[in-house]
Each structure stands twice: as structure tokens, then as C-alpha cells.
Amino acid sequence: MLDGRASAPDVGRAERECRVLVVDDDPFALFAIETQIQNLGYTTVTAQGGQEALERLDAADIGLVVLDRVMPDLDGLDVVRQMKRRTALKNVPVVMVTGTDDPDEMRNGIEAGVFYYLQKPVDVRILASVLSAALRRAREFDALNHGGSDTLGFELTQAAKFRVRNLSEAESLSGFLANYFAVPERALPGIGALLVNAVEHGLCGIGFDRKGELLRDGIWRSEVDRIVSSLPADRGIDVTFVRRAEGDVLSVSDGGKGFDWRDRLRLDGTRSVGSHGRGLVQARTLSFDKLSFNEVGNQAVGLINNRTDLKW
Image (tube, rainbow, N blue to C red; front, side, top):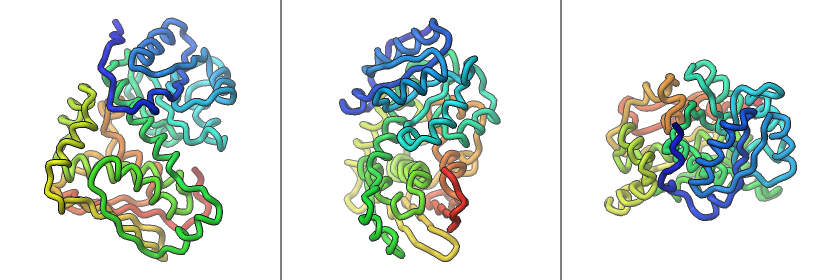
């Protein structure tokens, strides 16, 4: 039985006002998940197939798509691939709903551009946290600077150093930093994942299991903000960008105790459909040509090669 009740996640009013396109060829499944999403405070638009979904995307201002994986006319991955080929749609986050927990299928979806996977039957608590995370990603994309000649300053920069302390600063800096890279849309997810990871793990000491509890209770963001506000004023995350001959390098150091980064760079069946745990996998798969950590895990270094044949 699907429980449509849950506390609203840590999202702002502007995010909840974004339209969520819900797509499923099964009318009963469509009604069930649409009801869950509406009960969380979101406005919804529906489609009963992949082709209809693309038509809805062309006709309405959609902020997020929740999409069934298997449909008869045009399956979920085909819809994602077509969205990625369209300039107006390529940055709209897609949450895929699936009946499988096969890591290979999840990996294929992530490589195609899927933001998150939800496993049927959908747990409304996980749904709430995933929608919140997806819309934060959309906000980061909105922060990208595509201002014509304004990009010259980014292109001329050889090195830059920043310090951030909380989630809001990390999100804002992610969008700004992405402009230093040749393809900002490609770099952004990886930058965001590294900065958020540094805030929650490095500064706040929130582990994987604890984060899951906070997300289920809808208080992850407020708890992170609470912990950060109690820290000494000199605690922060050092972020460095350096342009080298082999490529553009991002370094993120948080000064914390570190974490088991080796496990977080692998996608398993549990994390592939859970509420969290895929950010670093996506960073390595979608954004960086090379992603490495120091031994303890409190410094990450991501490299994007100087190549023009990479496609987003």
C-alpha cells in the first residue's frame, strides 16, 4: 500500500512551485505517485507515455520529471536521451521510477543523464528527499553564468581560491565555479557533489546512515545549518581551481576526519535506489575524467581533461 503522507522536505516555496511532470503508462500507478507528489506540496502535470511526456515538456515550464522506466511507446531512457539533445530541456533533472535494483541498469541511466532512481513501490519519505535534491540541482544549473562576453574573465583565469562554510554558499559557488570549465553543464554536478559532501561529512561529521535518517525526517538541511552555526568561525572548506596543461583541476579540502571514499565511488543495488549515496558516483561518471581522494578522505581532487570531443 502506498502511503501518501510525509512531512515536507527542506525546500523553499519557490522550489515547491516548480511544476513536476509525472509520467507512467499505467493510469493507476500514475495516480498513486502523482498523489504522493501533490501531498508533498508540489504542482504536477501528467503524461501517459514517453511521446506525450516530450510534448508536455515542449508546451509547459517543467522544473522536474518523474519518469517510469518501462513504457510501450518510448521508454524512459529514450525520453532522457531526447531531453539531453534539446538545449531547453537538457538540464531538467529526471528521476526514474523502476522495478529493478540492477546496478548495471542504474549505471546506464546515470550515464544517460538520470539524476536519481526510485524503486517501486515508491517510499514517500525517499521520494520527498529525492525531489528536494533534484530541485536543488536545478537551482544550481540556474546559477550558471552564460553571459556572452562575461565568460572571458573565467577563460583568462589560471588559478582561483575560495572558502565556503555552509550549504547555501556551496550551492552558489558550484554554479559559479562551473563557468571556469569548458562545458559548465558537465562540470556542475561533480562540483556540487564534492562541495556538499565536504559540508555534511567534513564540517558536520554526518555519516551515511545518519544522513539517511535526516532525509527521511525531512530535516537534513536544517540540521546541517544548525551544526555549521555552532562551529568555530575559522572552520571552513578550502576550494581551489587551477588550470593546467593536462586539464582543469578542482581541489576541495574540508579538514575533517574523512570517510570511506572507496565505498562511495562504487554503485551497488542498495544505494542505486536509496535516498542518497550516488553523488560521488555521478561526479566520477558524468563530470570528472579523474576523481581521487587523499588516504583519509578529507581532500578531493577532480580533473577534467583539455579535450574538445567530450559531449554532454
